[in-house]
Image 1 (cartoon, rainbow, N blue to C red):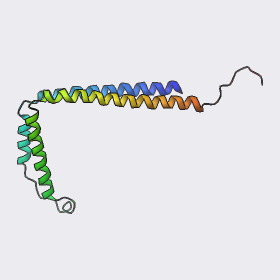
Image 2 (tube, rainbow, N blue to C red):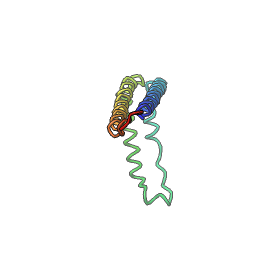
Image 3 (cartoon, rainbow, N blue to C red):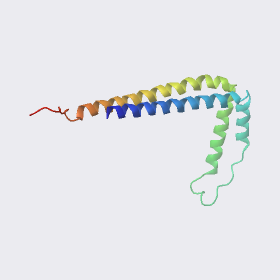
Image 4 (cartoon, helix red, strand yellow):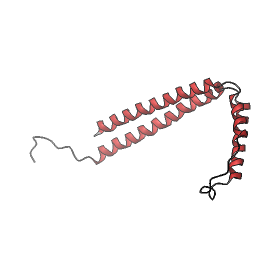
Length: 135
């Protein structure tokens, strides 16, 4: 049973590592493809959209004034981010290490759970029977 626990933990750790490595590569590719003014242009584009009237069935739950305020907040946030981080490379300098710190916390959690299960199986397993011993 202990072998099964650690085999499953190793499989999950490999999958977790692969997922974080893939996310790191994709984020680097996407942020590297972004030119210096892309964030500012995106903020301007988002701010220029008009909020359409909600359909009749959705009107009781959606307030178009709140959507317009949320849109303005998002546009201002993107404009500010474009001024602070002029390129995707500057953002990737933060995203990469944060991804791997998250990977470390996830792996520590996985190892802690596997260690706890290992201890529980050893503690609550029945006594080992001796073969060939007479009582």
